[in-house]
Length: 102
Image (tube, rainbow, N blue to C red):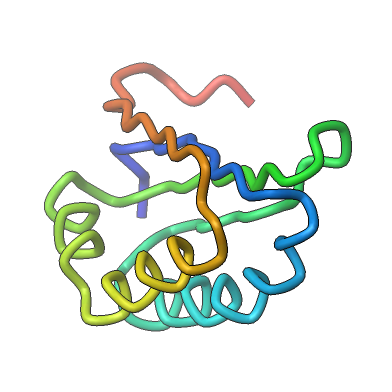
């Protein structure tokens, strides 16, 4: 399945709270990969910016992404992130319109 939507984003937490976030993040990633129809859903701590968690996502279409954003595991994740001190949230979705380069 070829992706038509790519999402890149980041969340910023107080650096000392990232360990508290990780179990909730694991649940989010597991549920998303198991149930939401993503092609890829990658998450990593930024080694150069403490407290930042970066996301990269590939979705087959915009409908799948919208369904993911309304999935039952999203609200509990957002509540947990807020409880862990979420400072900043930035995500951007892009339509893939060109030919795969690599």
